Image 1 (cartoon, rainbow, N blue to C red):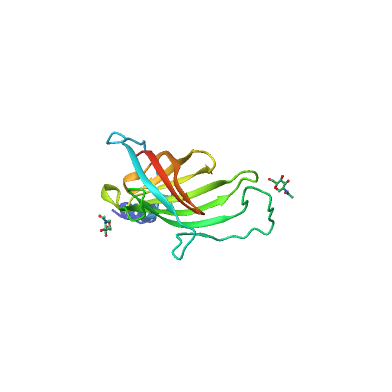
Image 2: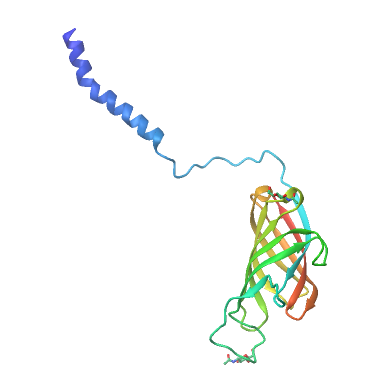
Length: 189
Ligand SMILES: *[C@@H]1O[C@H](CO)[C@@H](O)[C@H](O)[C@H]1NC(C)=O
Ligand SMILES: *[C@@H]1O[C@H](CO)[C@@H](O)[C@H](O)[C@H]1NC(C)=O
C-alpha cells in the first residue's frame, strides 16, 4: 500500500507534465496545414464582357495622374514614369449611362521607355448579378498601340476563388485622353 502511494507520488509530476503538454499542443495555433487539394465541383469557365471607362478629363474624372516624373523627354513617345490611379466604371454596353456591372480599381504606370505601354495592376470588382461582390485580380502589360492587348488574370475572390485566366482589351472609343475600352475576360475558377 505504502509502496503504491510512493509510486503515485513519484509519478504524479509525470502525469501533470503529460497533461500540460497535451493542453499546450492543442492550444498552440498551427502555422501551416497542408492537405491534398480535391475539387468537389468541376472547374467552371466564365466569359465576361464589359466596357471600361477611363475618364481623365472633365470635372468628374475617375482616373487621375499621381506622378510628375522629374526627368522628362519631350521628344519621347512614352510618358515614362507616369502613374495613374483609377476607379473606373465598368458597364454592360459601351455607353457610360449603360448598366453598371462593376468597377475597375487600380493603377497603371508607363513602364516602357520607347513606346506607350502600361503595367496594369487592377482589381475588377463586380457589382451585378451572380458575381456581385466577387473580384478578379488583373496584372499585365498593356501596349496601347496594339489593337488587342492581353493581360493575365492572376487570382480572385468570392465566386472567383482560385481564378486564373486572361483579359483581352480593345479600344472602343478614344476621345482626347479619355477612352472606352472593350474587355473580354476568360476565367477558370
Ligand atoms: C528622348 O526620346 C527620343 C525618342 O524616344 C530618343 O531618341 C532620345 O534618345 C531621348 N533622349 C534622351 C536624352 O533620353
Ligand atoms: C450587390 O450586393 C450588395 C451587398 O450585398 C447589395 O447591397 C446590392 O444591392 C447588390 N447589387 C445588386 C445589383 O444585386
